[in-house]
Length: 344
Image (tube, rainbow, N blue to C red; front, side, top):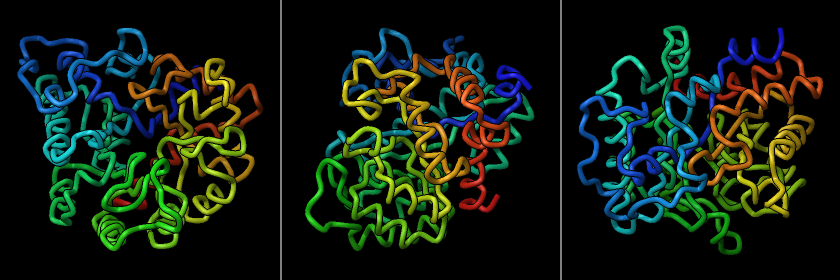
């Protein structure tokens, strides 16, 4: 099977994007690229708090539904990062998720909100795309486990415990205190997420917090967008010890396309660096614990946009990767974690 055939046949899942907020901040644009009479341009909290977006990547979105289809991207974790929404974290997150629900309601049959691995598989079989709702930064819980239950009922299936600053759950990778790990509330959140069937995302969490999560969680966890510190010494990247611990947990690291995570000379970072980080992780912990974590529409610019994802498949095959390993990296590893966590 050649690269194009394999990519088209494979289930391709991206572990992280910031596309929803980007679309809202660019004038409440529809993910479909169309409006067709659907009114999406009414004022929203995200737009009011953040203002219009100066694009990371020209004037174009890196992900929308046509680009997903063109790049063979079947599903993605659509995150709402509520970090900057001071005193408005919960409303900000609900505003973003409500935007997507409203948008998809106006264009039925194109994308489904997936609550389980089975939903993603069914969407691909039916020719539909799938979105996994993800909250980035547990401050969106407003220190309430009841809010966690409400997010679960809404369809949210992944929560990133922090962003770069510290949260109510743990310290962020760029704002840590010596010896600080999960807070008491953080321990309860991880335990309740395990019970409910929600994926714990350790992206952005500081070193001690990562260790605490991997020791505590009874389910596999994800680091949805990071790279390997052995190749680029950035505080957001995982070192080899952390990667081994993540693999021992059964989890997956999503290698990201953020240039500053890929190499110190970020201006020259590109696809070759993404593949180098993927390869380092694979050689260290095996292909079953590695996936894709673009950070499209949030800084992941080492690859142009979703239409360029097939180049990853081509590059992996050119390096001698077998079909089973490539299918795992492209999406089946994420699917396994979702199935183990949600039970379906």
